[in-house]
Length: 152
Image 1 (cartoon, rainbow, N blue to C red):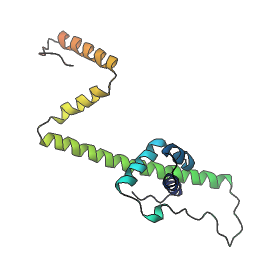
Image 2 (image 1 turned 90 degrees about the horizontal axis):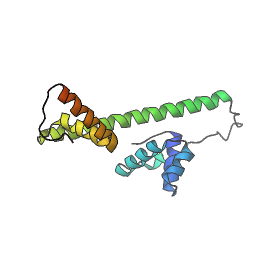
Image 3 (image 1 turned 60 degrees about the vertical axis):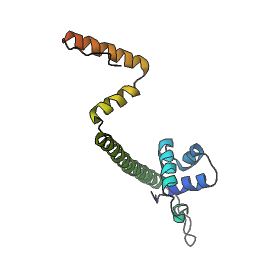
Image 4 (image 1 turned 180 degrees about the horizontal axis):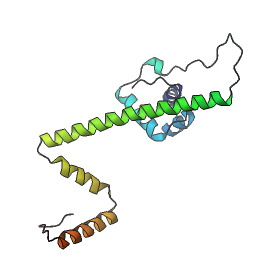
């Protein structure tokens, strides 16, 4: 992923210069999760050299522009929108990867619906999992549904 925002360039330069992900993210005003995804993307597909070059912030031939509150909020809004767009595209990519894994599992004979349930159960805390199993067993017994063995 080759990002063009100044924020991403600042982050990449900081990482290249030896900063930790957390420090680089703070310097570039990025979320830690987004920063980790950027590092992972950059490891898979290294960005071109221009992805590290900071964009000029002032024109040396003109007097410095005084920043108004509107300019600051416009820049912040633009940065936030760029971050959201980047995260949305990454989420779509990850979602496509997950679908591919389920397709692969289905091709090898596994039931994708059951795999989704197993993943949901594994996400639960042990106490919540036990409570879920007890309530489910109670409901099934009330309905006269018999299941051999245990569910968990």
